[in-house]
Image 1 (cartoon, rainbow, N blue to C red):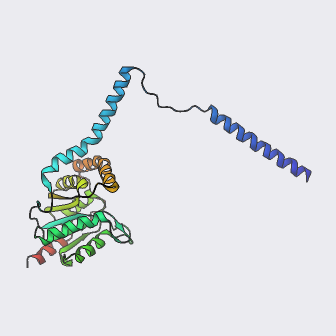
Image 2: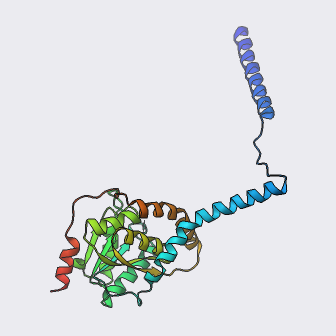
Image 3: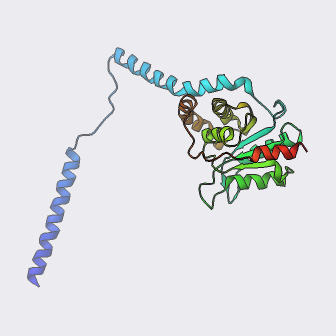
Length: 254
């Protein structure tokens, strides 16, 4: 028993010594500090470098806004096109989020006023329990859009995928795009790059925390979008062509 006591005492002492050594090592460990230039020339170069980075970060978003500005407006401004295209914006307990609901309200208005004949809803259905297009379809039918005038794209995982699939899979050549105002310039630029003659309807929202988050996210996403517009990669999932839009248009003209 005494031997066990001495062994335990030795272990405790060893543990304490190791902890003390580790603490001492942390105290003597060199700290990394951001050192600003002391000379005026160095400070001037640092400011110029920071400004250059800001310009580079804003350049893609500025390019998209300027390039798409003449093709963006309200539901009243929108030209007559056969197809309206609504981008997904998330679900909450299986129903469209408020932002997505506002997009769908605008699409329903375009249909009621005769601006479009068919609504293509494009969103994420990568998981069985998450189905944006079906939720969007249900919402539209509840607001008077006939079910046979709605076409679903279940692989619109992002804006570029939605645009490319609308063109290559569903054969859409001209469309009115519907999304929030902070997203519409990027969406219009991408769909035009994908070969669609696109006009964008930007749904206005109150300047709340969600709006500011969306605006900040657009700045981050604009660089990726610029590369997609230039390089034109294939979407995540392409697949065979589908006749849904053509069939819905045929029904609309009867």
